[in-house]
Structure formats: C-alpha cells, structure tokens
Image (cartoon, each protein chain N blue to C red):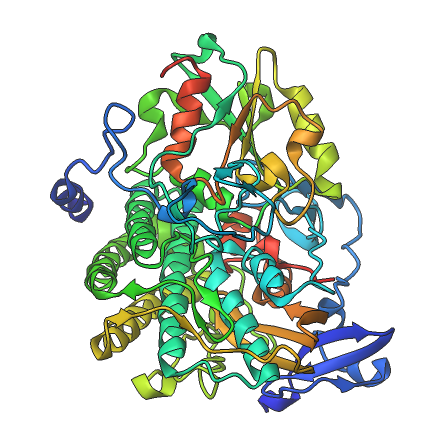
Amino acid sequence: MDSEVLSALVIIDGRTHCLFRGERKLRECGNDDLKLHGNYSFLMGVYPEPAKGEAVFNMTFGPVAGGLFESIKFNIRTYGERILSVTPEWNCKARRITLSMEPHDRALLKVERINALFSASYSSLFCHLIEKITETEAGYETQMIRMIMIESERIASHILAIQRLAEAASQNVAKHHLSALRERLLRVIASTFGHRYIFGMNQPGGIARSVDLEKLQSEVGIIAHEFYRIWELIKVSRVFMDRIIGVDRADRIWYVGPTLRASGHSFDARIDGWLPYSDFGFSPVIGEVGDSYARASVRAAEILESARLIGEMVSERKLFVHGVSPINFEASGSYVDTVESPGGELVMGITLNEGRILKPFIRSASWCNLPAFTEGIKGGILTDFSFGVESHGLIVSEMGDLL
Amino acid sequence: MKGWIRLGLEKGIVTTSFPREKPEVLSPWATEPVRIYPGATECPTNAIDGDMVDRFRCIYCGRCSSSFAPTERLNVPEVKAKVKLFAKSMKLFVIDTGSCGGCNSEVQQLWNPIYDLSRLGVFFTNTPRHADALLVVGILTEGMEKPLLEAYSAIPDPKIVFAVGSCSVSGGILGKSVASVLDCKVLIPGCPPDPFSIIDAIQKSRGLE
C-alpha cells in the first residue's frame, strides 16, 4: 500500500521524476499518470482555487503577524465566521539555497541551516547520502550518535509544538512550564553537542566533536517525567480540550509524521530505515481520529518514546570520541534516502561529482503537511485557525526546494 | 488547578539573575572563537584573518576547532546608538525575513520563565505601531523586503533596529544581510545568538550597561 503513495516530485533537466514511499530511486514519469494521486498538485505547490460565493471575502493573515512563529501568508476565504478555504503563500520568506556546484563540506553548512529545529535530521541524512555515494563506512557508533541527536531534537521540537498549541488555547501557565522545560533540554543539548541546535556535529564519515552523554541521559529522563506531569495537567483543562478536540481533522495516507500517525496510519521512516532503530525495540506511536488533540497526543507519547530510546542507546555507551572515516571524493553517483525528522519523513537526494554537489532536492515534512492544515481546517471557524496551524508543527523555512 | 500551583511551588524561582550576575550557562559554539593553537585554518565565510575573527561574518560552525575554541563568554554586540528613553520600558516587534528558525526560537525563549524579559521592562508587541524597536531575524529575502520596510516605517520615532544573528548582520552563508537595506543600530553576532547575548544587547541599547 505504502509503495503506491507518491512521496516526492522532482523536476530534473525539465522532466518530471517521482519517488514512491519506501523506494530509494527516482523514476521518470509522465504527468498524466501522476495526476491520479491526490497529493500531486500539492507536491507541485499548487493549491485549489479559493472559495467563491455570495458575501465571501478574503481575510489575510501574515506574512508579518505577532501570532506567527515564521513569515507565511494565509488567504482565508470566509463570509464572517466559517472558514471556506485557506490558500497559503508559503514562499514569502523563501530562501534560494544553492547547493549545486558547492563542495560537500560547504553544502553541509547550508543543509544544517535549512531548518534549525530539525538540523540533526537534515545533516545526518545529507552525510548518509555522501557516505552511500562514496561507499564510506560511517560505523555503528556514528549511527548511534546520529539517532541520539535526532531523538533529542525530536523531544525539543515536540515540546515546542505542544507549547505553541497551549499558547494558542490561552493556557499560559502550561505554555511557560513547557517553555522552561524546553530551555532545560536545549541547555543540556548545548553542553553535550556544543550547540543548542546541534550545528557542526555531523560530518560525512563520522562526528566532529567528542561527546559525553551521561548528563544527557539523566536530564532527558527527568525532562520526560516532568513533561508527562505537565501533559496530564493540561488534559484536565476543559478549555484546552474543548478547543482542540475535533478541530482540523486530517486523514490522508500521503501526510507524514505525527500528522499521519495521529489518524491511525503506522508509517514511520524509522522502521526499516538506514538508522538501526530496530536494535532498540522501536515501535511507532499511533493515534486515531486525526484531529488537533490526536496530533498533540501522538507528540506527547513520542516524547516519552524518544526519551526511552535515548536512555537505552546511552546505556550501551556514554563516551564517543570524534573521528571521521576517510572519504573517496573521486567517487561519483546519485542517491536518495529518507529520515524521520520531528515533523515527519524527510526525503533528500543528491548527485556527487568530484566532491561537488549536483541536482540536490528535498521534500520536507512541512511541504507534505501544509495541505493537511489547509484541507482539514475547511469548515472550521476562525477561532480554530491557530489551534489547527500549531497542531501540525509546520516549519516554513523548510518549505520549497534547493537549487 | 491545584496541580499547577503545586508544580509551580515545587519549581521555585527559575529566573536567571542575569544581567545582575553572569550568565549561568552559555551554548559553547554560539560564542566567539579565539585562537588557542597556531596554524592555518580555513573558514567558510572568510571570517578569520590571522588571529582575528570577524564575529559578524562568523557563523560559529566550529570548522576552525583545530586552532580555535569558543570563548564561552557573551558575544559583544555592536551598539551604534543608545536610546535612554527606553530604559524603563521597551516594546519589540519581531520580523522574520528569511530565518532557518534558530533565531526565531531563541527570541521566543526570551519570554520563558528562565529569561523572563518582561522583568526588565521589555515586552513583545503584535503590531509595529506599538513598537519601539524592530528585531530582525534571517537573511533578507526578496519576498520579505517590502513587509520589512513597511513594518519599519510603521514604528514611531525614536526607534531602534536590531539585526539578530549572523544572517541578518552579514548574510551568513545563505544570502543578503538586512543591514544592507536598513540602518541597523544594534548588531548581535551568533548563529543563532545565545538568549543571554540578545538580552545583553537589548540592555546596552537602552543605556543600561
């Protein structure tokens, strides 16, 4: 079933190539075949025509607004209360990130900065692609560190998403507790990996800094426990629950991450992926219903699961000395792979030629899940808007493609 | 309700004593690198010249770590103008012109109970009309130049523009700096700058050393 899910569309040399879920090779396709897939136009960045009708008017939200974490513009069509359609303009702050013809080490710096909140996922996947093309053995220890970094940023990112949802629902006490908890985690990440957003740790073939994970292990355990207490308290609030239950239902097989799993689908790129999650008994968290509450619940459970994974991984080994395997940069080739970033499955592909990057592309989790918001919020009321948008944990900076 | 009160009491006071005292902790590679060993070092942004590091061009990537180490001290901002009128109260309007999300996150963290910027009389505002200062994060992208200039002109005089982070200060490795179109009076280095460094720059811009 998953192999029938259209995962990414890439235009290379003027021709459309597609990638189906679970596959690692781009196929050249005719557009007519692809148009049968429900997400074809969304992957191309084309959204349905805005709603029209008597007394329907356009309400603009963004790109610069106090309630938005990043710059994005939404055109909301309404006749006063009910949301009839939402058309996003995601490219207000689109950066033209050019990787083509860049040497791999400079390209890595740019890749880390596509989305700082998922930086470890991006850099780990990029390094993995380089390693595959150059046939470099990164080693099991490097993969362990990469998993620990990705799970650490998953906890930080999920806390931020739930914190922003609490803020949208006017739960300011909860918001401040969560925000302080996230700060505690960012500080321990900084002391462990040298940077609050894990910049500069990954390198093709290894890791750039030595790390001692003992403090991270104990702190993550405490943070997960405290998070659970806060989450149990939030759920008691009728104000919070009434605002998010039943809001912005999203149930399509082609969504990714917590948005997908909250509607009962089990797809998670950590299963059968290139990182050895199966050695630590990982199983995905699956929700039901697919509303804003379900997404928050999946995130809450994933925080606990990530903390468990970090605990088990660090129990095996606490100290990692930096080291990088030699890389054959005369190797050339192309490779495509995925990683489960905090927002969901991230797809990236590159071609390497004499150490320089060619034809790079990404399909980010937010690119896949933006339609989940715009489609799910239809029929809701204007008050639901912020609960819907925050529950998906969308990151605008990762929308768009690479040059 | 009782649960929240109990949780709050258990936590006690978590707010930092900064700026009265030194920062409790700083993110190492958010602070300026300083040479510790001799030797040639390649810098992706050409921020290194001999022993000197241009802290505004630096993206704090750590590629120079064979010869340089982070100081783990507050980054020194460049404050070209101070407005003492804002010493008692200052309202900030934040605009993202092309950020990776790192600077946005650090600016958001300033309002958590640990940094609690409001205790220093500094507040967020949701409209530039009510703002005293503009905090700009990210490189300058084509789509955000007009909204940036509109937000700037909507802020009443006197006003200050803060360029927060390497991208808005120098363009970093991703593009054009905000300082190229706006007269930024305060430049805060870092990729992203540590929250303590942002607080320090805000205080200095108000004449509060």
